[in-house]
Image (tube, rainbow, N blue to C red; front, top):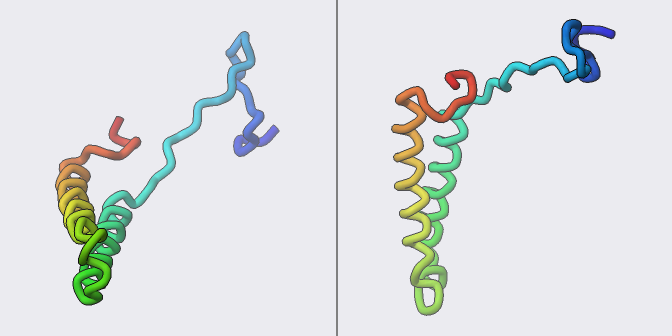
Length: 88
């Protein structure tokens, strides 16, 4: 068995429990920025095409605004050092 083998076991574990794994490093800030930018692009498209924000779809722009606001909150929250598994 090699150290990269997912079936590797703790040598001192009587129950044969699997070895603990390290958290995956994820670029959280990049994901937040990309998601927020996608909501911003969607808002611009919706505002430029009148049929996308009139009548039954009058709530669509507010959905994009909410996505942008939540993205801004996420940027602030992640920037404080929260929201990643490595700091847990």
